[in-house]
Length: 214
Image (cartoon, rainbow, N blue to C red; front, side):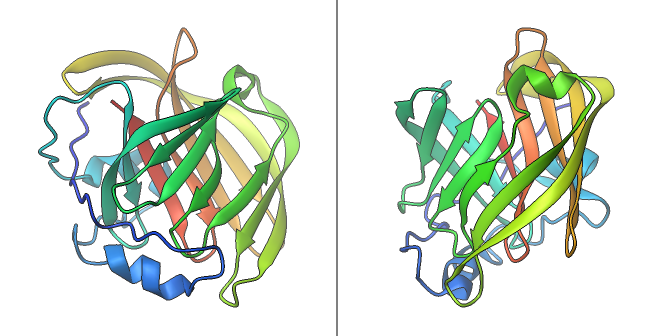
């Protein structure tokens, strides 16, 4: 299976944590068309990404899709702090990932201010039950916390083609249920523990974000 993308370099608008939520989301709305999946976003979500004319792709680049708004962008790796890697768009929006988990976003409006989970990286391969916590910006620019009861499980083996490279991966699902929201995150992991791509729920307004490492 080969994923193809829409490149939108200026689509993700940089803004502070207390900036208006709708403005930054509107900045990406309509540029890539409606790429949000019509069905459950977990397994088929990345298939709707359209062609990106990215030249000289390298391992320090990340392709990102905000499914709710239909926006996409390419980000570059700008910093590492222990297991945390931070990726930056041309307009200053950032995403921080550790062990495959999206920990924070900045510049998307309804940002994820922090994620707490005891299960990440290779631990996702082992079926387990645990609590996952999201701190995010609500429509009033206030930080709100949601807790979820989560369970991880194996989905299937899948061959992925990314930037003319082929990866043999195993897909794992993370089903999370809360009082107000429920979601399923999906992770595609190689045998050596590399996260090739993932689709993860961020917040009620921002919805799902998908990433793919080049």
